[in-house]
Image (cartoon, rainbow, N blue to C red):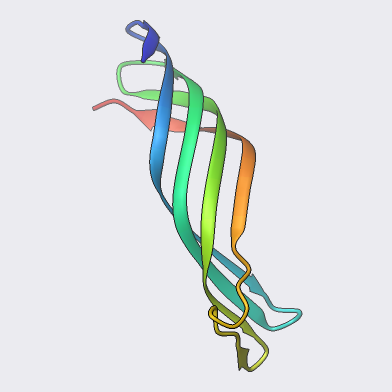
Length: 103
């Protein structure tokens, strides 16, 4: 939903639903793991264009990630997710900014 959409300014709110993938690698313990799952978030964002095509984008989102362990290896040992599973529920605020283009 766009609260304000002018030529150079855009203030909006959105709901995001999707999938996520998380990979963690730790060289110190020679471990790596991968988790996949769903994502849900509610965000408020603002875009400001300096000219016709280039601008900046700022947003804050309250997100939730429900991730299921896909693989985990510690040293030379592969841990089977059926034997030991470390699923994750990650949630909290997210902040972002970047450049945007309007073509």
